[in-house]
Length: 273
Image 1 (cartoon, helix red, strand yellow):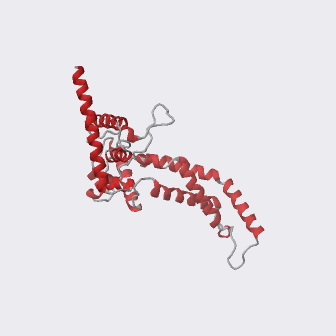
Image 2: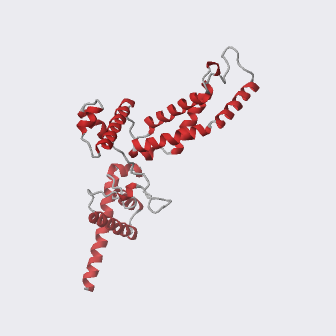
Image 3: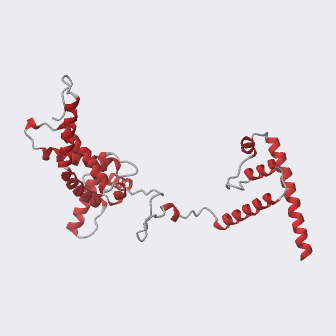
């Protein structure tokens, strides 16, 4: 063991010696971590390809190092067991536990993952034996799982993608996220563009018209001329620290002034035509 008993604590220099020996032992057996992580990563990709983006090879190596440190601290040479066997199972357990807990955006219980792994293994074996796709009933029967339960397990194991996932194209370093490629069919693009153009035109009109500072601020905030966020009068009054009635009167005065400017411009255009 690489630790002292609680009744006989070691001096500080002995603790430093133990830590140095532990670190040396961890560095010596790092090759075992890479070997177990590489093999587990290959099995993981073949069994759960949809969860591959969640855990990379470096993540599994990191979890394996934690398992190796645990093995070094708990190993008891007096039991006669070789250290490599003890460390192997500790590393493998740490990596498998990390896969079960972190491989999916929404964590599935361990018993569900075990059932799902069994269902996929049976389906793969049947496809190899028959040379053709097999039905869910056959897989459920051989896996000793109810058909509806097997269907539910498969549905719950579908992959989930974050809208912030980068989409790599042609080895692009700064890849755009997935949300840039999603189309919102509930928004009328033509109306949205028309609204933006109208808001910009109104903003220019407000800037060019002789308005009081309060009147300009009220229009700017209420109709979202700066940030595109429309606000009610109560919210505008809270931002400007004035009464709601004052906001209403300032808005009406500003709209009347803008209406006069627009009417005058239309009259001038009519005379030119």
